[in-house]
Amino acid sequence: MIESSGSCKCGQVQFKVDGAPLQVVACHCTLCRSMTGAPLSSYLVVREEAFSVTYGKNGLASYAVTERTRRHFCVTCGTPIFNANPHTYKGLAMVYLGTVQGHERLVPGLSIYCESMLPWVSNSESIRRFPQGPTRSA
Ligand SMILES: [Zn+2]
Ligand SMILES: [Zn+2]
Image (tube, rainbow, N blue to C red):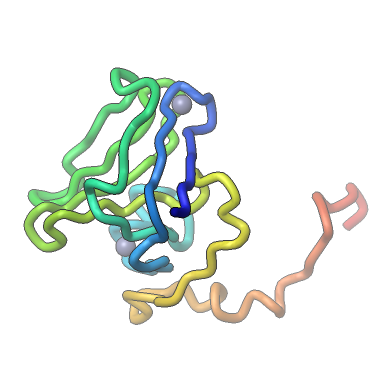
């Protein structure tokens, strides 16, 4: 069985996911944007019971983003770990892609809330690119 592990930036909270994700999603909703500060958020949809915190449970805090959605994050470094919405998405956890080890191999199968996608996100080819940070003269 595939098992993925992951952690927040500081390592205070560590978790594992048993099995393959049900789905990998790229979400362009304005709620995700405001709570991550990023133009879009990407996450793995997994069964609640497939997700477990293996280290640092006490380092995990949560915030009610809406009446139904709760965001769980590391109290020390602030990294978002997962969201849960037991009303609309009962029994599921949305685990932030960037926190999962080996997330480079995970490609979203769905892009959702595209009506609120920032226009440059789908047009990023037109933005000047650098393999790393730009030089001062760039
Ligand atoms: Zn942390
Ligand atoms: Zn969203």
